[in-house]
Length: 243
Image 1 (tube, rainbow, N blue to C red):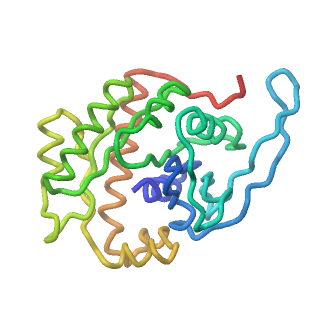
Image 2 (spheres, rainbow, N blue to C red):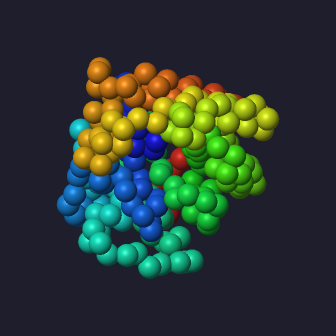
């Protein structure tokens, strides 16, 4: 869903970057079908000093940074605590993002300390919580919503993914209403979406003949509306400058 949000917003004309904060299971490069190693570029800092930053890998106009570009495809990433915090900070501050309208950050599942790290590093417009419709998944979604509330990150809304016969329908919409958060839409379970992701062609999910086009576009539109609303209510401009 993070990759789909990035593609949908970029197709709408926005300048978009996506940061893969799932350090242990980075999948964003695969979804976009890109690989390589970021080049080091030099930029001038606010006081004229030279700063070295990583140039993000670009896929059809979307700028991407992921630990997946820095380690082998089968190599595990074994980090914790301060090193994890430092890695996230480096991705944010030492990537040459340029001017962006949106920076989408793909978080790992669960309620680990990455969300806390992000809340300390910059002002986030908000979080989108994604879950499947069944009760077992909704238990974790509720924990995620409460976690974001505790670390003062606005919850932009809830997305129901893989809606259909296997996992059911409507659970996330009902839970969103119970918790007082916006419901951003549902994306049906469909083999074509899985095939495109496996093939590294997530952008094709937005093709005119794609069964995912309408639901994904709806989610992107609703998310953009909630971001605009969040910024109007509590204006804040995230800064990625080196401190």
